[in-house]
Image (tube, rainbow over all chains, first blue to last red; front, side, top):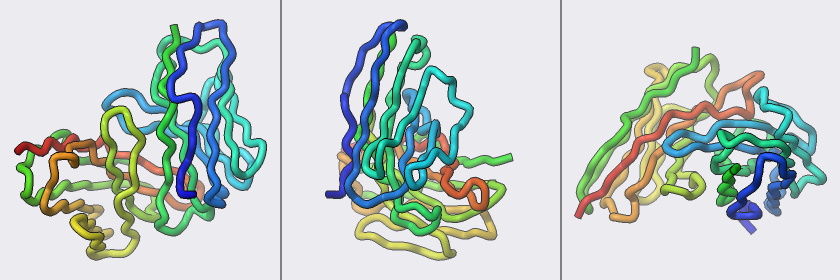
Amino acid sequence: DTEVTQTPKHLVMGMTNKKSLKCEQHMGHRAMYWYKQKAKKPPELMFVYSYEKLSINESVPSRFSPECPNSSLLNLHLHALQPEDSALYLCASSQDTGTGGSGYTFGSGTRLTVV
Amino acid sequence: GQNIDQPTEMTATEGAIVQINCTYQTSGFNGLFWYQQHAGEAPTFLSYNVLDGLEEKGRFSSFLSRSKGYSYLLLKELQMKESASYLCAVRGNAGNNRKLIWGLGTSLAVNP
């Protein structure tokens, strides 16, 4: 299995809703990432988990809350989002260590619309 | 500061060769990646360079010169389906070991 699976593929939520994005990989990767991507822009790093511990938080607002229940799963809990948070949310994984050229494997993303 | 530059748009003809350049200025260097991204889809890993020189993978090649802070992606025998955005990304080192610094992407249009 060489894939990163993200659910749901599309999500529409109101500003008072609570929802969660899910990400799963079974490649034995020990680093997992959440990215946010707006149209015609590169991915913007939000969080990095290494060995199930949060190692990087790029000053993301607290309305985004990540969780890594185990080495294969990564969640992003959403609460009280704003319309400007509408974007493609990408999960990625990599063999950790920060070295090596295996690349980052991205999931197909969740297209989030906040209304 | 940290900066990655690549052309915004390029056009090429089906069957031709195209070279997409990337220059970077970063506080550390631990590898350079090229990704392909079709609109609305996830980025797909194409290549990785950490030492100077050329890496070849079929019709795709990537070159790196660390002293010049320069890389290029070479695509041969272009196919229509390769119309996409091509993203250059540099991995930092030390405290930024797991962070990629991304260029804004080059939108490539392959015409018949």
